[in-house]
Length: 140
Ligand code: ATP
Ligand code: MG
Figure 1 (cartoon, rainbow, N blue to C red):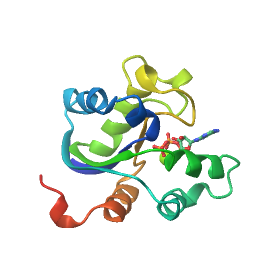
Figure 2 (figure 1 turned 120 degrees about the vertical axis):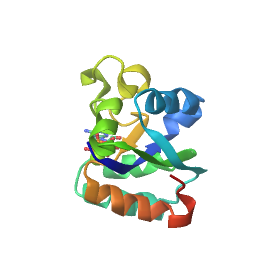
Figure 3 (figure 1 turned 60 degrees about the vertical axis):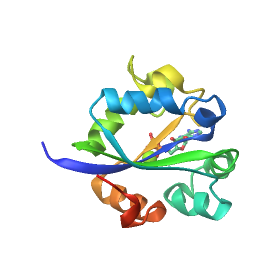
Figure 4 (figure 1 turned 90 degrees about the horizontal axis):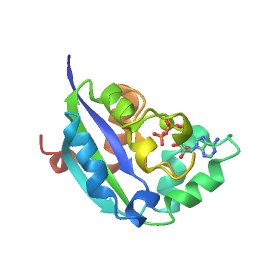
């Protein structure tokens, strides 16, 4: 086991329903530590750049619109194998396929409004963390 940091977002559907505490409890109960966190409203430019890998996908414009439709909470999570651990805690992208007990199974509204984002690799985690946080905003 190796200690890693991963990047997480509590999406607008989660902040709208006042679920930030319940979702954070899932991270903490499953061994991840929130070492940085801020509530922001993403700009259109930030959302477009953040999801640029999906630019060619049919859901891209809707996704950008959704991500700026309300506040989000951006976070850095730390723990053993944090990237994979967080993906497991989140559950499958489509809540209909998510395992019982996962965040998306319990809280997601739809494939798009699926409550959380989590980095899918250590490399992307580093890029995504640097996109939203300065080094001195992360306190391990
Ligand atoms: P995330 O990147 O948000 O952690 P993910 O890695 O499970 O989720 P991706 O394939 O990277 O899923 O898609 C990014 C996001 O785009 C999803 O979380 C979801 O909000 C949205 N999305 C993905 N596929 C679809 C789809 N077919 N229809 C609508 N929205 C989608
Ligand atoms: Mg992804």
